[in-house]
Image 1 (cartoon, rainbow, N blue to C red):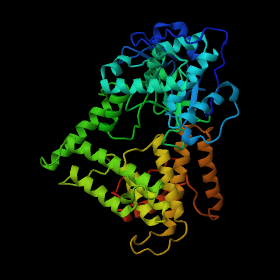
Image 2 (cartoon, rainbow, N blue to C red):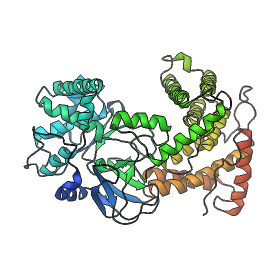
Image 3 (tube, helix red, strand yellow):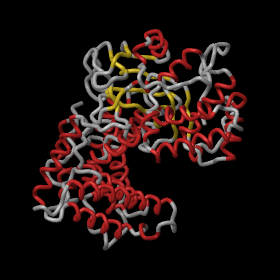
Image 4 (cartoon, helix red, strand yellow):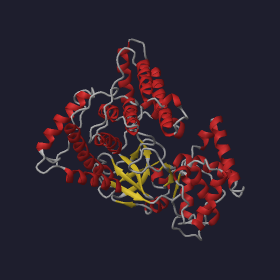
Length: 507
């Protein structure tokens, strides 16, 4: 679990046992605290913590305009904890300061969630007086949703049980009322540690400045990690004095699932422009079903598709655990059955999630089982049918499609159940074009200095070295014409509608 105690005045007073989170107080009401917090990050533009535009709380604002695909700030979070399942080696760095104590806790309770580990470390630092006066004040201002949890009997019981377990793990050295209040504070304010190439988080982190950023389902910024460093970059142009927003959940999932997650984790009903637009679109599409479907039926089908793919992923990872989901042909049949339940008259619209994501996931399962032709069909259909045409999620998903394409660099063995394969020259041309666009988009959104972008750039350089002398290079008009023709052939072969293809950026 890689982290380090904050650089602070260890002689100053630490977080005390009188900690009482107060959602009525906001960071912007304490200018001195705001200035301290902003000094902990390295920012490319002036930042300010001010009253949020759509709530009673605080928000983070830019002082100058920020163009699309630019760094806003980076920082090393106050606390970062890697999931015990993903961190198999003890870290010698900081052993005497915190990790020796954590190893004892992990041995006793190995299934702790990452934000529990953040809280354990916070309590440990409190005892060791690693928390400065300013950090203690900032923690006191964190939103906890304490009353929201208390008003829900089931959630209150959940919090109490977690607090009791944490208290026991610390040998009851921490006061119960303090732990009781800190558990929801960590659940609310910890952010998932997602590195550029990963969709799943590998841990949790508490970053004071990032905890001030408010939510939007159509955000203008996003967060990713590189090593221990948190980086915040723009997804679109942000005007001077505009508020920075991020998506608290996966922005690629359906509107109903986003709202369910936000309601459970942050206790608000999202009525943003994007949510309302998607709800109107879904309602309009369902009118064609002649009363045989509804939003409720669609939302349940979306949940069922997500559950189907989760079970398939587990069956793929742990053979024998879910044998009913190991047959990918049977999984595809279930996928079609669930789709027909929501759209019995016409087919499920190509772009409505989670069908595109399900197809792309199936492609990767097929690829790992050596079914490269089936993988290609699902990858092209799943990715090109999606409306996403930029951003970090597009880069990660298109990289999967590239992996499928490049796996077909040599003819696959005959397979009657998979059918004919397109011409290899067309596959190779599309693969090179997608990789060219990947380089452009990765540099734009993750930054040219990120390890992820440089890795994609190295792949692209390797491809160029192998390109035959005299062949058109990506970025030229000759190559663009070849690419458009080849992509059209592959789309026709995979039954992807015309107009869904990737348009290459100019050189």
